[in-house]
Length: 349
Image (cartoon, rainbow, N blue to C red; front, side, top):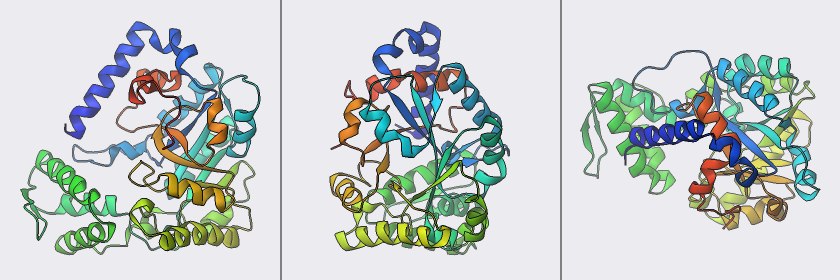
């Protein structure tokens, strides 16, 4: 199934949940004690037809709507530090945690003023190479390379696709992305670097363009409402790498962040964060390294049982493809996760 069709089905499901009122009458069954929301980019510009990473970007207006809706629906917005105690204690009002991955400059330019106006805490997960102005935001490199190319070829594969129209570019992106994600990360990085070269782009330049620098992060660290978390050194899909690389990426990323900011770093976000990128081995390392929590991108709310799995916590993605009141209401209710997780409250294997 294509990504576009999948998102159309999701949106239809969200509208059905809203139309039937299931986001309210099923919420007592579906909703957990709280949830951790995931954000990436927050920026006002309109995206074109070819925008394969649009799921990672929401507008400032929608972020404001998210925070207003949380308050209206009785959620307490808390810091990530408070989650272990909230899960271990007695159930109370539902809570929400706000997390932003990678360390993008637009989080400070566009999200931070809204977060301050609402008076809510938030967590920024920082990839240390990105803060240093290097590292590979390969998913964005792939998008930009295909935007410039009229044809997309992957040497050594059968992939040779036209990329003249927006529709052709979107199809080429999805085909290449799926193929490369299934293989070794070194092959993915090399293939995208080759595409960038053919498109007249230099791989590794986007971090300096899009991400907060260490000086920016030190300025942000003056805000007591911001918690910083580790997001590794170079943003690898950890499960694809050996144990030594795993430990180096997680430990060195955390230690660099602590040195640069002079703050403790107690939380980890696994890059990409799905089961092909983080699993039991990665969860065990995060625990052994002393992180208080570690978060995935496995979808779901938090239940009391997650108190015993603090290094495999699910999150709820605030998806740029679904910036609608119906989608948000459904996600806050927990109802979609009854189907997505096949009735399971915990998905930690």
